[in-house]
Amino acid sequence: MRAGTVAVIGKANAGKSTLINVMVGEKVAIVSPKPQTTRDRILGVLTRETHQIVFVDTPGIYKASNVLTDIMMKTTETSAKDVDLILYVVDGHTGIARDDLDLMKRFFSSDIPMLIAFTKTDIMPAEKIPEEVVKIAEAGIDADVFPVSARKYRNVKALENEIANLLPEGDKVFEEDIVSDKSERFMIREIMREKILLKYDKEIPHGVAIVVTKFEKRPTGNLYDVDIDIVCEKQNHKAILIGKGGKALKETAAFARQDMEKFLDAKVFLTTYVKVEEGWRDRQKLIREFGYDEEQN
Image (cartoon, rainbow, N blue to C red; front, side):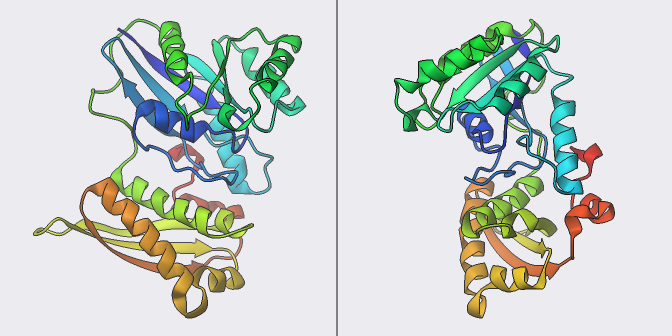
């Protein structure tokens, strides 16, 4: 058997989490069209008879604007050092930019093998793909490129097979029934944050932290009690999150509860509270309290 870890690296919103979810076959990371959706280092485990691939989903590379973002970028850099393979993911729809090539060169210069996944090919003209791929070769990056579409499952199996071929021979890292290293409590938090990312615009979703203050299964009946604090940075953000007559928050919570119930295969009694902590993303103590400390990632 071949088994090992693969750091999935790329710019924000390149499609890393979507690709991992499709390859693993289950949702192990939240997705949204907004940059910085992934804040944590998350493992997604794909196990076959012949190989086990442990994907390390990392925060998208993004220019640091606060302490939280700086921690996220350090998490990405650290994750790329102690793995068997680097999978660099580039958004094919937007094309390969100069900073993509610079990042590819930086990771390619390490002693770790690298593959490149060219994503979202289902929403770009097919004739543009060779033109974009040529840019990589012309930049002196001698890595195999796999144009893929996670949504259409196009060329994904070929990518999986090549990843497996490059992994070392050895025992499985995880048991066969494990698909992620994250707890149910963590996933409940992320489901709530995903729905906020999808529901609200502009800066508000990025300034939100989700704190699960209660996560308990009742002794009788298939029912969980879940209490969540939604922490934002400004009073006017709180008003927007709640909405007129609480409508926006009720809609978002109902949306999240449906996914929570699907994930837990149980009923969920969800209670949400909105709180304000001015500038929490630049306050190390609060970042740690909210679960985004660098050591925890």
